[in-house]
Length: 471
Ligand code: FCB
Image (cartoon, rainbow, N blue to C red; front, side, top):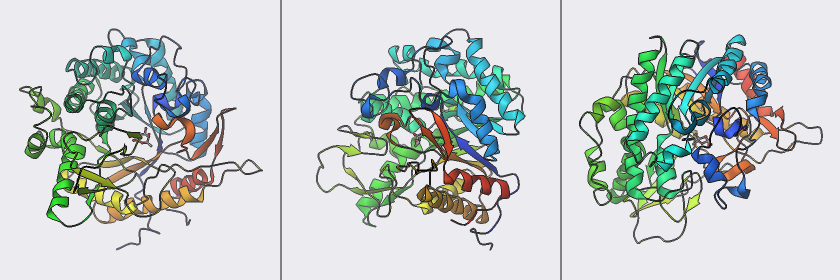
């Protein structure tokens, strides 16, 4: 068996970086764009750290050419970005806005000219506000609106983009957006959370069919899931049952219908006090269960759970912010614990074994389906030194550890075709605002100057050589 620390990655392996529209674009009022739920949420006092918004973000809408040049300089072979729904179909209904689509056409052409493979994500959380005003993801109609939007973007970019992702992390859209309320639209309703999850699944299925109807057959359609690696605090049967419960709510609720055409019966049983699932209509599961060309996995840190001996009070932190409301419906008898070990600036424990575990799980769960790591990375409190250089050895160690886990999974038989570092550059980290820096490229928010950190140089060398440089 080859040593993952020195073995080369497969020659066609994609070395990418990822971003999303609201986190980087800015220009929120330009060229006919209307507000998304994240514009509304970030402008609502108390919802984001420091009241930060994506109004300007890192001004990628105007600086995309320089940003693509930077990607080329860093030897990236792929770039994952998302399309802003309200930029290309304001209000989420009706005809497409060509000037909005033109931005993405220019971006893609720029990437292709530099030999960088574009990977489009249709939905990275910026629902047009008008659709939320009509009920948002808990309403069935939003899934049909998404399919129409997918068709618009598929028609505009299908000739030049081969890699497509319908939704990014539908778990966050449903459970953080409608459950804990730490993400837009900020609702805290357990029943709405599960309705949203189903309609996101339906949107994925209908959107996949809509894309396939208008795009060349060579294009690949996928979804990016933040499938959780859930571990028990002990081998006590009650803790193992807590793991299964959270696994259903984090993973089975999405990969059940998407990969296998059914929801886990245990999910229905465990959530019966919250919802009767009567909104799952005849034919929905077949619509959701579309053959996929690939699966995207986003991974940051594992979860550690136990059965709760007595009810715990107080705020709950579950990844992306804290709230008095749990994102997990009907799971108040489960406690989340801090996984031991070193942590990043997000407080997320660093554990590359979780990534290996996740890849091997989906290698078994979806045999033959190519996998991409569509997000992985770390936030650190980076600062330029007096010479203006940004040294981030912790991020290099994080990337080295996780890429080694990917390489080990490939040795163990997994078909991982690429890795997208989160993120290309520092950006608007949702409820945390600009306080958390995930970029391989440092952004000075006063001047918007971009400076590659030492991790960007390290990653560029990995991309160039197909082998991990030493840390
Ligand atoms: C993921 C999101 C991405 C970013 C990273 C840190 O859940 O998809 O936009 O916030 O976390």
